[in-house]
Structure formats: C-alpha cells, structure tokens
Image (cartoon, rainbow, N blue to C red):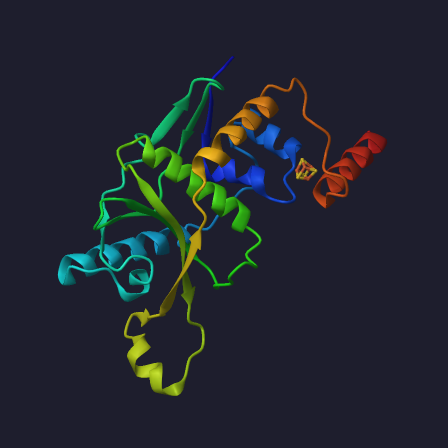
Length: 239
Ligand code: SF4
C-alpha cells in the first residue's frame, strides 16, 4: 500500500454534492498536477494581508479586531505551523493528512478556535463550497488536536467581503497617487465542530478511491466529460 498525501482542502472535495470519484481518482493519480488549473494568487495575498491586519491589531491594542470579537472576545492569535509540520499520518489507511489554517485564536480558557479566511461575498448558507469548507476546517481541527493545539473548541469561516459601492464622499479617502484603496467588511460564520466523526471515514474513502485499478465512471451529465468524449470521437473519425 503506497502512502497517499492529501490536503485538508482536497479532503473537503469529497463532501461536495456534485463530487465526482472519477475526477478525484485522476487528481490523485496525477498528484494534483492537472492541466488547465490556473488560479489567481490575489486571494491568498488578501488572506495573508488579513492575517497581518489581525496580528498587528493585536500587537498594538492587545485585542482582536472587532469583527473577530464576535467570535471570541478575549482571544489572541497564536503562531500557526507550516503545513509540512501540521500533518497527521493515519496508520490504518496509510494516508497523510496535512494543511494549515489561516489563523488559530487562543481563548482565555486555553482552548483554540480555528479560522479560515475567505475573500468573497458573505452569504449565510448559499456558498456552494460550504460543505468543502466545513470538512477543511474540521480537518484542521483534527490536525490541531494532535499537534499541540488541544483542545479545539470552535471553527469559523471569516468572510472578508469587498466593498464595491463607491460614493463621491469616499473618493478622496480612497484614491491615492499610486492607485486606490478598497475596504473589506468581515463576517463570521461559525462551523460545527465534529472532526473525530467526519474525518476518519473520509480518510478511508480516500484510500478506497485511490486504490481502484481503473478510474470510476464519469458523473452522469457532466458537461466537461461529454465535451472530452465528443472531442475524442471527432479525433478518432478524422484520423
Ligand atoms: S465527469 Fe466531470 S467531474 Fe467527473 S471526471 Fe469527468 S469532467 Fe471530471
């Protein structure tokens, strides 16, 4: 049995309603290096900027910014380890789970809240990726509990919502010589903590799909696979 490595985020894919085992199998067999996967880096830059704001705010005022105080009034940010250290090896499945959350806040009772930042419009339950994020956060809690952040007492997504309305009054404050500023509003969405219940069965499922000798069937009606099949059929006819 060869070891499988999976990130908390990729594990979350299994929870999506339109999850496709075939895509997952292909992705694992390609070690995640799929073609046509270009992601803009701007979102991780904003997440990292958000983290800097939180930490600098705490350094200066000894308290969290107000949008995080609704989550934990008396809390402090603690150093989050690099993902290469924030990992757990599951002996039963030979799967290495890893990943690192954007933020870990320690409450005054010593417990921890795991936070992930999302740069997006805030919608309480309409985010189609919410099932993925719920697993991702629970995976971080699973790792945290085993990596010295015990106990984890809460999970939260913090949406940083870009403020795209602009009035004439704001113009002079926001426009600078070299460009312009854009404001973000923070919104907290707490996520149910059930790491020990949710994560082990998903690790088993990762192993099961990974070990299939050939790719499982395509999701019925998936447009991408239909396009590919059409392309292959055309190429076969022309040759
Ligand atoms: S059915 Fe869709 S999701 Fe599944 S492998 Fe094909 S393209 Fe990917």
